[in-house]
Amino acid sequence: MKIALMDSGIGLLAATAAVRRLRPDADLVLSLDPAGMPWGPRTPEDLTARALAVAEAAAAYRPDALIVGCNTATVHALTALRAALEPDLPVIGTVPAIKPAAAGGGPVAIWATPATTGSPYQQGLIRDFAGGVPVTEVPCWGLAEAVEHADQTAIDEAVAAAAELTPAGVTVVLGCTHYELVADRIRAAVRHPDGPPPALHGSAGAVAAQALRRIGARPEPEGPAEGDVTVLLNGREGVLPTPALTYAEGRLLQQVAPVR
Image 1 (cartoon, helix red, strand yellow):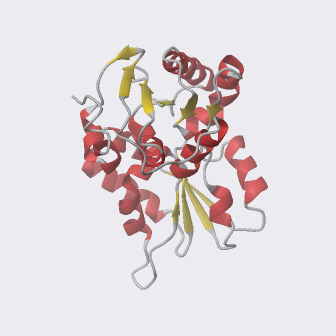
Image 2: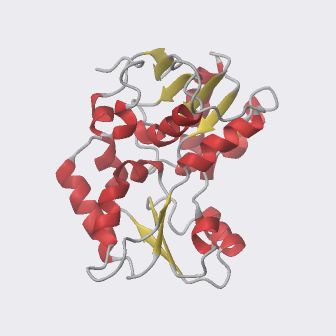
Image 3: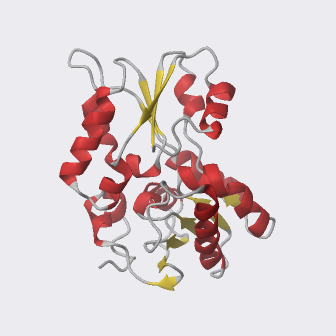
């Protein structure tokens, strides 16, 4: 079994690690766009064109499924990706975990890139899955880029700025895959001194499970030895960017993925 994942950068690590934990035997193809990142500030047309190129590079390795490990790419390019690749290659998008976060009935804050915050796509998810629940949309300026480069000072500054916009006592949806790599720092920033740790909802686990369902594979976390990892940088085989090793999700792949 082979699962491909795509993103402009290392935001796909969260879903990659989730796939690895569910099926350690699966071969993985990680397709990145270092020449075009970040995707967030790009026009929808430009982003879609770059996402198609990254997806087609991964598809050439004949995976059984392709995970779009990026919320912004899912918002703007999922329809085009499915039109180009399905039904031969199932394409699984990454949707902010608004539905499970709102299920408890309490207020929700959605941390997302400025490009996703306020978008018709996110507004539709809020209408569909958070009806009657107070929702605060929090644009996280510079956080994805800071995480991508493992810039610790910039991460702290971006997290603190977003926390200032986040009401107390909310459940937080991590609406960008990069944010899942620093979930502990986000939780600490939004925690009220006298309250319990806030609930955070990411998408990586659900996306990994959905990919397995789409191809009829069962989770086997105690399976055989780890599968191979192929890293594609703008379509050419390469190595994981060094900042990936800053995060536990990247270190999980270190033994089987080349790293520079």
